[in-house]
Length: 140
Image (cartoon, rainbow, N blue to C red; front, side, top):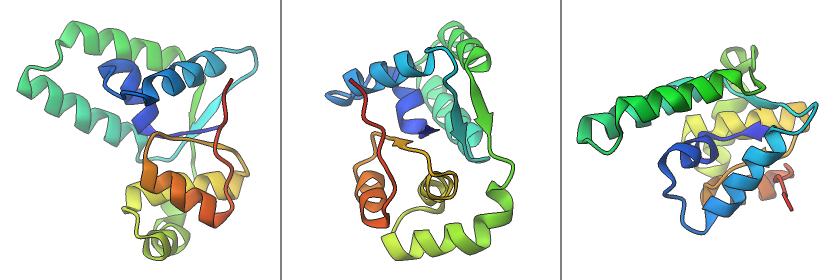
């Protein structure tokens, strides 16, 4: 699967509302034997940005953040080495075509290129993925 930061961050923040159950099922699927997730090179920056903002507002304690980061480090998450080389070509084109941020388009580009289902809670990214012919991760 391609793992969007929206899903991973919901494991930490538990604020995904109806999407929280989906995020939990993605977490369980990732814990399955032989499972892994791919992420674009921007993924860590997205995670770090939200954590820094939440900590600065006092919404997160550093102990909780450290435990979350340790869990992410132990998870089978693989950073895509081609994200950068496609940023100003394929990713930019997807961003333009589907009116996505370049960050969101990087998930779609990776899902299309790797032919992997996309795990996301972002409604605009879900719509774009469907229009582009990418699979969305369905979990049971």
